[in-house]
Length: 198
View: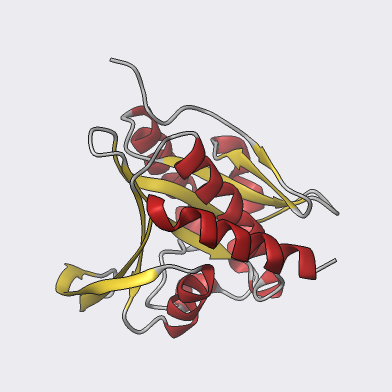
């Protein structure tokens, strides 16, 4: 059966998105240590000693056409600064979620995320022909919720008691989406924001 999500690399002005692989274990471990991101109980960032398993799980999901995971590389110094992926892929209904995204603390709020999401959204709507792209985040992750809204996504609702998180707590998940009919306007807005950085 033909895969929907195939290996690809994206190059922007500030970042490169490269397929996540076991060769990134050391560099991704360093990235997650910057800010001790695993201590943020509402995020998906792995503990340093669990990065290998984290990557292997992502590779397995890619092989099963359920996700397409990337490392985010800052171009100016070729440094791995985080990870993101297409996930919960539904080829039949042409829907995908962009998630499991985290950045090293020192690179947060620097404009890199805007370019990253632009590259992913452009591919989702213009190459995968998606009818909708979802974003999901923890109800307590206000920084993530604000960032998703700034992209131009609309809040669909809240899944209450959605999952049991890594701490054993019940997580309410906030769901956002961008529809294919909204993409041209969202695209223009993101391009304007990206161009303002230069």
